Length: 369
Ligand code: PEP
Ligand code: MG
Image 1 (tube, protein in one colour):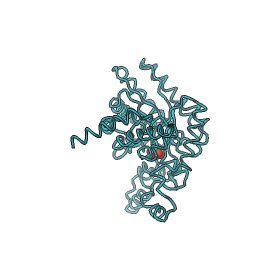
Image 2 (cartoon, rainbow, N blue to C red):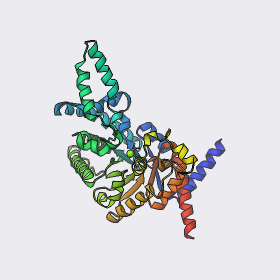
Image 3 (cartoon, helix red, strand yellow):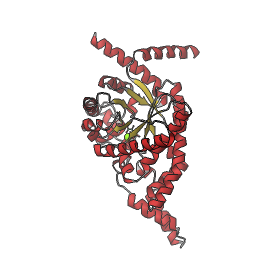
Image 4 (cartoon, rainbow, N blue to C red):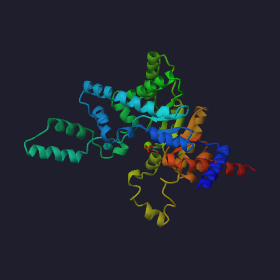
């Protein structure tokens, strides 16, 4: 096995020598970041900050979202700030010197709020016993108000950030404070702020203006000059089709092909495993699930439109992909041809992505001879 490891390393080094696409990883913890780095990742292309609030920490976000008034919300935000700051210090420390794209909160709300049915039953049973808990009753009211029939098409991503005051500002401040602290220690943190699920330029403009304001504030407070790139995900057809306008407000785009596939085809990404794809692929309607390999005619066309129009509007626009397709060999060849700057995938897929990016470069060289 030792010989095999050496041989694979040699192969990957050759691939690294020829590839044009850079390879980053999707990681949300210092552990995953370290692993990604060991496997050759050249940065983090997607840190899903909502993953930092799974399990016991979920309640920290829940309190912000369900706060009854401004005072309650501010208290919940104040509790969250130091937690997020330390999260980002950990991640940026691990990725020192490498670009680290931190995506603002993008939770489908149903994954973060208490389950409406369970809570209704709990409250009803307590009432029947004459043991009503006022906290649960208030909570139920709030959860009912926020309940959505289609959460994946609802209050997600930037929409949540614009509807819940202070939420994105808190995360941006946490990134800025973490960066300033590391800079003061002589480190080289390279965070980038990414806005999820953008559909209109106005959404992006509002968040970007807020980000610029907070960068200036934290620069003033800490004496560290902060100039973090701000960009957005392209994961809605409308975003791809208005890329020229978005590029006016974004230093980078990252294609979220999971959502872009879902919204282009109207297929539910959550049901993909058990859905009808097996029949569809078996009887030849689809050659392969579009969630696995980029559907070049549909999703791929949207990517190309966004690349072309985005770059025409801003020649130095940086372009990457962070959907699952970023680790799929066939899709990587497509992204190379489409002219992206990097792919970002799960840490364990990084070596394959390096290899495929190398192969893509070799085959396009062969095409030009
Ligand atoms: C995507 O939609 O492709 C993406 C990377 O974001 P998420 O999977 O977190 O929705
Ligand atoms: Mg997405």
